[in-house]
Image 1 (cartoon, protein in one colour):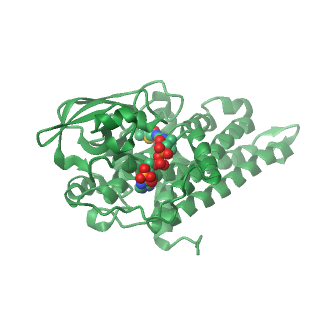
Image 2: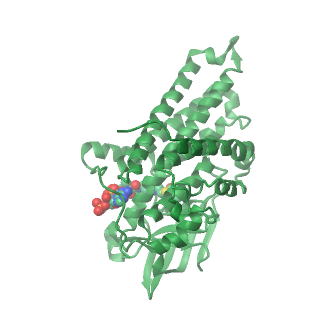
Image 3: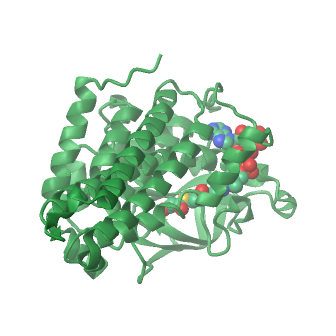
Amino acid sequence: MIDFSFTDNQLAVRDMARQLAQKAIIPGIAEFDRAGKLNPDLLPALARANLLGFCIPEEYGGLGMDYISLGLACEELEYGDTSARVILSVHIGLFSLPILTWASEEQKQKYLVPAARGEKTATFGLTEPAAGSDAVGIQCTAAKDGGGYILNGEKMWISLADVADYFLVFAWTDLDKKKKRDHTGISAFIVERAFDGVSTGTIHGKLGVRAGNTGYIAFQDVRVPRENLVYKEGAGFKIAMFCLDQGRYTVAAGSCGLIRACRDACVTYSGERKTFEKYIKEHQLVKQMIANMEAGYRYSSYLWMHAGWLKNQSLRSTRETSLAKWVACREAEAAAANAVQVFGAYGFSDEYPVERFYRNAKGASIYEGTREIHTLMQADYVLGFRQDKALERDLPKVEQ
Ligand code: CAA
């Protein structure tokens, strides 16, 4: 039975993230967004609030909270700005939770504990200049060499590329399988920024999420020790898909924060601005846009909570997460477009936050699976082209 009531601990995380958004994100966000810079105080603030590992078990440096708490925190952070939620998406969703699930005990002690405590920052490297949706089209290679691997290639559009200490990187270890596009030739590695041959850079001129760091990582003959292979050779693609199941979940929940921010901004503004001698909130077409925001917020919330409920039981939620991510991002784009419309000419300027919401909302329909990938996945589940593995346990047995 799904229970939609929140526990005291979940509410405490939500309230703490809400306060952090009010104090540490919203006050300076317009300036950081305009300057295209990550607020240097944001990661330390998230670490101090234990938000970089709160849903990781206590034995690995976290607070042992659940997936619903993670969703609530993402919603609250994105209410402040998308760039803040993106930090949780990559650091927790695409790195820490997969390491918790797939890595060896030694790897957890070495990499998960400092990440969960907020002492180190981590991200994920799958996408490349010529391979985004087509994840099996990556070109990065990790050739066996003595006791380890030599990594070569480039990753692109990586959140926190210029900031993170650790990268969960995907590369081909079997070149015959690469030619055949057989995903069992891809492996996953934990790569440290400090390894020789790793270099990163920031991408400037983005449409949205300007206050977030996005960049590229280049690997030139990087020696990766055998101990940094995650799980086993050939499991990389499944690990990447597992990562995306967690990352997409954070995007879905975060998008609900963006929809709520649009709704609240419109409620305030429509009670201040008059046209035709009436507050604009009294005009039916404005009411309709606000009502649509509320509907989008409600049903998108139920979708990510359903996925979170499955995840809390270690059940595969690929189908439910994809649906939640697709619908929430679509609703966020619609809410932000309508928010700009409600504000009229003022919505077109950065005097008000809705133009930032509009630019930020666009990104989420592209990263972590484009809306087209999720549309096709949903159709394929219904048509029987894709198998629903909802009752499968995600947790592998780690072979030491
Ligand atoms: N746990 C364990 N195994 C899993 C799994 C999970 N959660 N999810 C999938 N798998 C397994 C599947 O069961 C399958 O195993 P078998 O071959 O043994 O049956 C295997 O992984 C492959 O899964 P699929 O069959 O679903 O793979 P596919 O080839 O059908 O996938 C695709 C096609 C859906 C288009 C996929 O390539 C995809 O999702 N592409 C989009 C990639 C994407 O989202 N990129 C965004 C990168 S992140 C980013 O942009 C943000 C950033 O800042 C870093």
